[in-house]
Amino acid sequence: MRVLLAIALAAGAPVVHHTSAGTMAARASLLKAADLGKGWTSAAATTQRGVSLSCRGHAASAAGIVEAGAASSPAFSASQTGPFIQQNASVYATSGQATTWWRRAVTPSLVTCVAQTFDTLAAKGVKVSIVSRGMLSFATALPHTAAYRVVAAANGNKLYFDVIVLGSGRTITDVTISSFLKPVPAKDEHALAAVIARKLGGGGAA
Image (cartoon, rainbow, N blue to C red):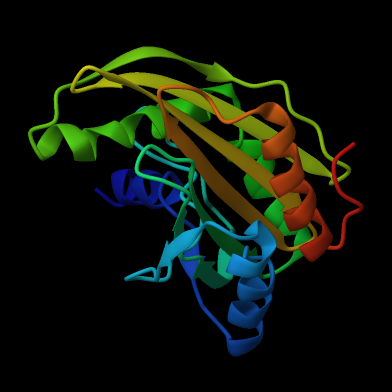
């Protein structure tokens, strides 16, 4: 039983030990309405949470990883069909822990977790089917960058759901960019990533 418990803990989320400094650092990486320009509306996040890098089918080991801060941006929307943008950020106890967690968790199979986002819609009675899923070619000047796309059919409409994961120093952050009918242009996604990269101390998109 102890062995099974140890395995379960190692495959779960990092230990949470938030500090005021860690929380402030996580908040500093988040997008704000001013970063998006005119025409966007926002709804404040009901809960503050960090990045989620483990799920059913992608159980990365979180052994030795401590989350020192977490924060969520508002949910931004440009229209009823999108784009929709939302960001979460986690700050870890050390940059070494952040790098280790990235190496373990931000792999091609993380797209499994992205796809499971649609389980929430299905649970609400929305007819959802996954059309395609995989990694996107995406580069920034930050030490760590990865991007994933899941395309789904929801009640007859095609939904493009992109998640860009960025890492620098003690911080790992993900930004979800979604839109009905057509994907958000790559240049717009790179521009958003460049804004976040500057907040993380990087130079922007490569």
